[in-house]
Amino acid sequence: MKILVCMKQVPQKDAPLKLNEAGTWIREEVSYEVNEPDAYALEEALRQKEKHTGEVVVITSGPARSQQVLREALAKGADRAIHLEDDAFVGLDAFNTAKAFAAAIKDEQFDLIFTGLQSDDYGFAQTGVILAELLGWAHATIIMQIEKTEAGIRVKRELEAGYFQYVDMPTPAVLTIQSGINKLRYATLIGIKNAKNKPMRKVAMAEVASAIGPNLQKIERLYVPQKSKQTQLLEGSPGEIAKKLVDKLRNELRAI
Image 1 (cartoon, rainbow, N blue to C red):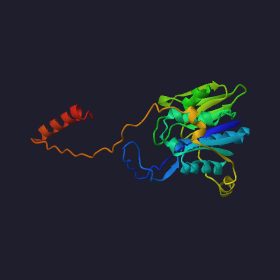
Image 2 (spheres, one colour):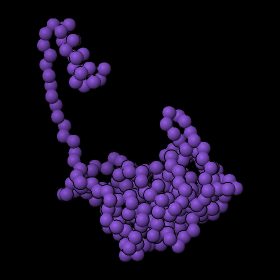
Image 3 (cartoon, rainbow, N blue to C red):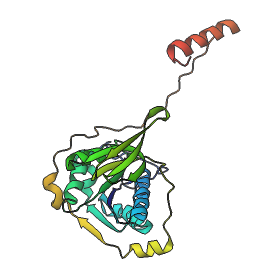
Image 4 (cartoon, rainbow, N blue to C red):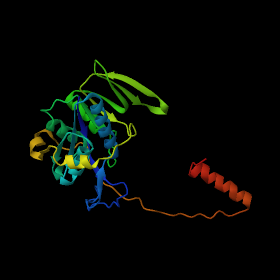
């Protein structure tokens, strides 16, 4: 079984964030980490490889710093990596990112492609399903369990209100993996050492530029909510104050 895992580098959750001068995104001088939902996708791919044998390949896009997520994946057990390396990849929307990935793997033959449910920064949850459409593959989202069958795979999807759905699917297919599907492993010392010798193919923007078009989705402006304080003094007898307070909670704040 040959599995591709799409991964992303995102700002650390506790990193102090400041907007850039244009107010369209955050400044670059922050600490970065692996997108947590993608870590669960990687873990599931490694477990499928251990169960059925095969190869796990990881892919990401972004500047040189993005290589960190690939190195961590290789240290955990991925076999090789593909890095679409260029600062320009950071500004792509989900549609063009999926197009770039599709162009980069056009000569590969994968059985499955895994993505995390969504990214911790943008949170669009679009790249995986768009990639499936571009490739003409079957796809399913919010996956909690994967079983290999004679005809393909059987997956368990998480629905709302505690319900689940079981779906039989052909392969190749793209699956977006639900966070919490498994317990994440740590990279071992030998894994970290071996990761340095595993192959990493770099793809320049020029190699996939013909597949990319204008962004269909863009952020016009970001802003930090301004704190405001509006104190109101309710006067009258205790009964009158209580009546006024209930009225405000019910009709203005709609808390009751």
